[in-house]
Amino acid sequence: MTEKRYYMACLDLEGRDCLVVGTGGMAEEKAAALVECGARVRTAEDYRPEELDGVWLVVAATSDRALGERVAAHAAARKVFCNVADMPDLCTFILPAVARRDPLLIGVSTSGASPALAQRIRDEVAERYGERYAELARRLRDLRPWARERFPTYEERRDYFRDLVTKELA
Figure 1: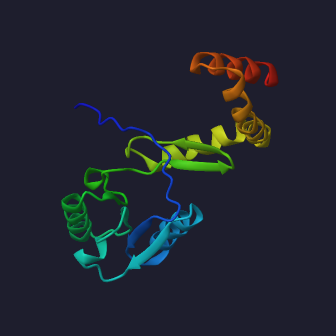
Figure 2: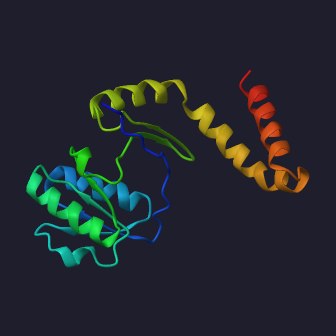
């Protein structure tokens, strides 16, 4: 069996319309995570296809396979990104286990094979890369405009920041 390959990305959802289909703790958790990232979130307990109109992404937080299949099919027809919790075969995107220490995000995915394993690895990695790394990320972010002015090429900026990270973490 060929492993499915995913393209990892961090999405800017600020001001984007998102829909969470479902009720209960899982739906509340998914909605809260989207709101935390600035998304405009609507929830649908009794899902209707027209609720996808104008939506950028949808999360179906349900254990009902038939409902997940309907949401996925309607989302595909509208070219809306879709995640159906615990049903990776229905998803056009999956969610990694994330540790957040702004601006540092540590995401771990098993490509849907085992969320429990991804969470365990996330916790171990997050313990290793704590506040020291988040503070360094903030300082490096603040240096980026200066580096763009000082170093005209991507390669020069890349090398400058690699050297700086090496020195800071030695």
